Image 1 (cartoon, rainbow, N blue to C red):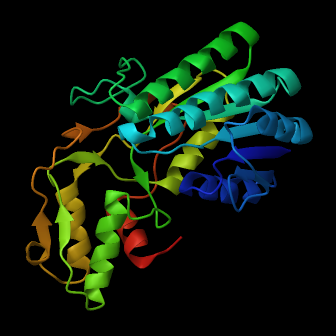
Image 2: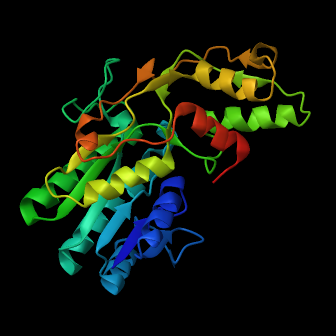
Amino acid sequence: MNALIFGSNGQDGFYLSILLKSLGIQVIGVSRSNADEIGDIANLNFVESVIKNYTPHYIFNFAANSTTRHNVIFENHQTISTGTLNVLESVKQNCPNCKIFLSGSAMQFKNKGLPIDETTPFEASSPYSISRIHSVYAARYYRNRFGLKVYVGFFFNHDSPLRNEHHINQKIAATVKRIKAGSNEKLPLGNMNVKKEFSFAGDIVEAVWKFVNQEDIFEAVIGSGLAYSIKDWVEYCFQKINKNWKEHVVETEGFVAEYSILVSNPAKIKSLGWSPKTSFDALADLMMDDTV
């Protein structure tokens, strides 16, 4: 049994690879660099050749640029929208019994501050969300028209020590560690009252694996359903080094948050027998201690 992971260099690909290998599944990582198969998911010829060569039992597509900025609108479209179509069409043509998982995002839903579930309507609020929404409709088309087993998991915020500092949780943890080591730097932050989920990537990929090994549910939000503020994370990280965060954090002027709260209602994914194992505090400990 084998599995292709597109976007294998990210945290989700890393933790899923560990899980699958522990189960005796051959994992083939696919990325634009440092992978078993090196190439661009936006290139149909490349995607089709990889899928035809391996005829996988599973395909997991994590390939994406996760920023919502407008200046990457075409990269988002190529990687997420075109990439999804390339995978789906290649599976249709070469291994139609393969199970496909597509990663979606909490950011593609209309957010009214209430817990988001699978019935919450989509909202094209950014170039990123446009591409994600398109990929879901492509999945539905190939599922309904051709009978492909295409699963879509809508990820809410999840982290690990593998995150880079473009992600706020890692930016905070890394800065606090440098301050502990003697740095005099200040930590610039916007609205610390923003609330979101703080899940561990290793737990999230376990949900993905359970998700694709059943055939009753094909779209599900994947999250903890528990929201914490950025301030909660800051306080905990500074507490670990016995320092007062107020002496090291400076407010970013003019910062406008994309939302005040972003939280899931994970009842459907939990109905499959999954629940996160790693608490808010435990995730902060992992990231502060660089424990992969």
